[in-house]
Length: 517
Image (cartoon, rainbow, N blue to C red; front, side):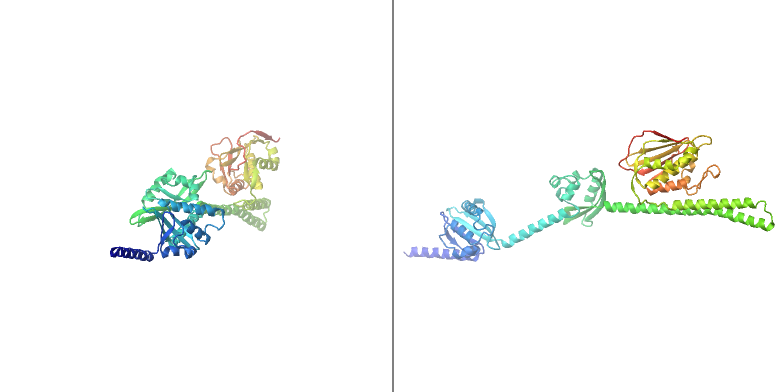
């Protein structure tokens, strides 16, 4: 009898020790028998059961406990009375009855997160463990929120972003990066970055990646890329290496579109060159104008002195002749000033920019030259002419000057023959005016476009101030174009005015004849 009592005492001590041990742990612990009745639980299990813990008692079935937790609002994601509640409770009970591989984390009560683990013991009982993982879950939720925010940030920045492993494997790209290379993020991730890098910059990419060190963890470069529409896009790349000790753990590549900056740089360079050209032209213009304007002034001064001397001496035989020289010099001076005024009114850039049919421009210029055409018995042939963008009045003046010169500088005793036609390439359109006149010595191909430059000083034969070609050049340049003398053409002279292309321009040449008699 004493042995039985001793055995019972030891069993009670063991139960007390087990109870004390279970009460010291913060995890909720419970045991259910084969009929799913609660036979043992600690205070932590009751506390972690929330409001349902107040009525928790031995003998309750697992289904009773789940139902009680549901009714007291323990499962906050399941709205009371909702259609999904019954199905959810049934699934929870099924998971409890088959606990071999079920570890669940779920929200419980108002703020808690619980990790539940159920294991069936060898005697058929089910051991349930409940752990408060609120802090861990909140940290995980915060981390996931940060990950989403980071992902959203990378997807919405204007830059191209790519993460690489040390062996150049793509780990992540944002949508802008994938779109820039004409593919998807899924197609790029896991592949070698060189697979989509243009061939012409692959070696540069290899060198830059190899050059990243703890002492130089950042490298930058600028590369041009041909886009799908054929345009050139400039990207400024920044490579940033993340190191684990002295070894590269990861590389982040960030690309920014700097095409607009490149355009601005080119524009500044072009404007600088243009400013230098204009300054040189201004210096030349000043010197030329000073020389040409002083000549008639010297004549006026000289013959005025001679008139004064004749009057004082009473010799008047040459007075009329000297006065004629003064008058002619004054008239020449007036023509030069008028020419300068006309030249100065042509701006370097036009304001009235519109689409212009050069055929209409040429027809209007020919109407203005009608008298000269008749006097010279000129034969004018007009081919197909393109459409350009420009100022119609200025273009008419250009055509009038070039056609007028072609008529003026004809061979003595021969009718003027002038051909006017267009040529077009992919990015430019030409206005060509050629004649069979006296021509221009190729050595003067540049000089003839200077202000007041005349290759025929005798105005009794070929009248003019030498401003016409200079004016034509300025008009061409104001349209972003050029004018040149074709030095290989003969007989006569051929001038070619080149304009930036206009999309609506005919490409063929069909001849028409325009002749006035």
